[in-house]
Structures are given as C-alpha cells and as structure tokens.
Amino acid sequence: MAVINDDLVLYGSNFMQETDSGTVGGVIATAKGVEFVGDNLNGGVGEHVVGRSVAGTADQSTTIGGYQQSDLALTEDSFDLNDTTPVEGVITYLHLLKSARLFGSSNGDFVVEGKNPVRTGTAQSGSSTGIQFDAGASAVDDFYLNMVVRLDGGTGSGQARRAIGYVGATKTATVDRAWTTALDSSTKFILSQGFYHQFSPIKQSTIRQVFYDATSAGSPTPYYEKVFIRNTNGVDTLTTGVVKLQSDPNGYVTFGLAAALNDSDTTTDRKTAPSGITFDNADKTIPSGGSLAPADRIAVWLKLTLPGGQPSGTYFYRLHITADGGIDKTFIVPIRWVGAPAVSFDLRLPVEVRSDLSPFDRLHFRHLFQRVSEALLHTRRILPVLPYPSVLHTRMILGQSFDLLHTRRVFPRKTITLFDDDIQRPVGRADLQQ
Image 1 (cartoon, one colour):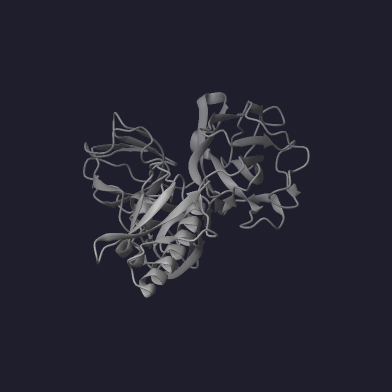
Image 2 (image 1 turned 120 degrees about the vertical axis):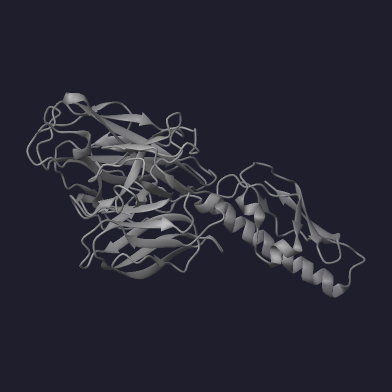
C-alpha cells in the first residue's frame, strides 16, 4: 500500500527547552507532539482543564503548563487519572503551553480539554477522515483548527482526533488521522481547546509549544527549535518529497532542513543558530533525492525572529510536504511569544489625587494606583494588544476581575482616571508615557 497523508507525522526533538539555556535539537522524539491549540481559553476568561481517557483503561499522572488566569504567571498543574473518569485541574488557565502524560497502564487515547467546550452537537455526517458538524457551526474557514474533536455518543463514540482543517461553508472538519469506526448522523461530538495524546500508532506522552515562553526583547530576538517529519508507513517509501511553506501570517518564522536524513545534530541553546542550516521559506527538497523510506525522518529547524519591542501574540505557522502519489500533508504549529510593554506607567511621577479627599484616602489611592500599574505592566507582557482604559473602577481593581484584560482593541491613553464606585466619583489620575 502506498504512502498516504496520515503516514507523515510531525514530532518534536529530544531537547526542547523551556528556558534560554540548555542544548536544543538531537534525535527525534516520537513521544513528543507540537500541534495543538490552547490560546485564550474560553474567549479570554480562562478556565480549568479536564483530563480524561477517551477509551480503554487509564492509570497515569498528567502535568499541564501554561499562563494562569489570576496573574498570568507561568505555572503547572498536576492530576492523576484512573480509567475513563474525567478529572478537573485546580488552576484556571488563560493560555496552555504543554501537557505531559505518564501512560502507566493506559491503553487508550487521552485528551486534556478546556472545561467549557467551544461547541457540542450532533454530526450531520462523517467520512473516514472527517466530520460534518451541526448546521449551526461556524461559517468561518479554519475556525476550529487544531482543536480536539471528541466523540461522546452515537456511532463512533469513544474516539478523539485533532482538527487539521475546517471548511466553514460545509461545516466539515478534516482530522489528523482516520477514524477507527466510521461516523454517521447519530454521532455526538465535543469540540474543545486543549491537547490530544494518541495511544496508537505511537504513544505521545508530551504535547508542547515550540519556542516555549519565548520573549520579545528591545532588539530583534532569534529563537531556534528542531522538529522532525517522519514516514510512519511500515512498508512503502515516500518519493520526490518537498517541504514547503504554506502560510506564515506574521512573517516571523523561517525554516531549514538538515543536510541528511535521521540526523542528531544539536545547538548550544535555543538562541544559538545550528551550524550548516540555511533559514528562509523557499521550497526544500528532502535529501537523498526526496525519498523517505519507512521510519526515516527529516529534521526541520525552525527560526522565530521577534521584532524588538513586539507586543505579545500568537498565530499558526503552516508547513506542508508534497510528494508523488498526490501527497500533500499540512503541519500546523502554534507560535506564541511574550512581548515587551508598548506603553508604561512612569511611576517616578506623583499620582494626582483629589485635594478634597482625606490624607488617608489620598495615600490609599496613590498606593492603589501603583498596584494597578504594576499589574497592567505585567499583563502587557503576556497578552497581545491591550488597551489602557481611560477609567479604572476601584471595585474592578480590588476584586481583580480586570475586565480590561480580555478586550483586544488598541486604544492607548495618555492619562488614566481612577473612579471610586463607593462614592461614585473620580478620585485621581496618573499620566502615561510611551
């Protein structure tokens, strides 16, 4: 049987660092995946995650990493699973970055989902590699890209896959590998952000972000990561394979191929360029005449170049591989980075507070402004394009609901006013500077 798209899988490498120190690259890590979506959970409100085995038995522990909702700090959450009973984590996340699973005696696929699904419903129909969602699903192409598709009722129940494409006009998603059991109009689905750990053909114990917690500095910042495309077909060889850029909306990522198949090259750390690799987005023929024999893999080095002072952001970078036999397989890699503040409070200047307030209240609100400014500055590192509002309400600040953190409009202000909800009047203001 000839090589098909499902036979071509993107894996991580042995050394993928979470900080700027330590060796990067090495051999292929087939237990490590890099394709998922866990950004801006629940529309930016944040939520807990739920781990569950989709089918079979489970006996494992799982560690989740990401930016938590309360203060946007990078943190981890661990929980244990037993059989197919779902377990909810205790940390509320805004952005997910990794899921690391110890399989134990598990013999089935495993998912980590946001507690509140993006969509649930009954399928209109299905195919060997796809599912047609209900008529009310989004009409926007790629709206559910990289999300977990879990079947929890009707024909095919107990399966999970990852959406690698979505056509809004037909409400149809393509999944990363063929369904074991075909779907029909009785199939019930759940769509969520999160991680899909497959059990077969190869156990994937880790799903993680490339360029983990990368940060934009004052000048252009390069980061390097190594991934592999592998032919998992046990019999047939891929021929005339070419790796190509499919899309890079922001233009921050370039790629290069290793000079030989099955290599184990490394670089000193993730900010040091690997030797002998040319980075651009031109088409690149796989070494050895474009062939990938069974179990062969080609290393793909990725380079993220963040402009200096770039605000935080995220997008999907897509590569694809074409080859004889109609092969055209797309790989979708989420890119996320932490940015530098675009606007900052000048804390050296005194905060102006109303003169008719008591000395105690004047001191209280001056300290409160400092707390708010520090929180805004920290948040600006994590979230993209944040507005600074013209008015901050004390109840919003003291209750830490921070509604302003979840809007996406760019609306910078030169001054910011503090409004006291208890006495229903403004009590002070602070000046902003670029």
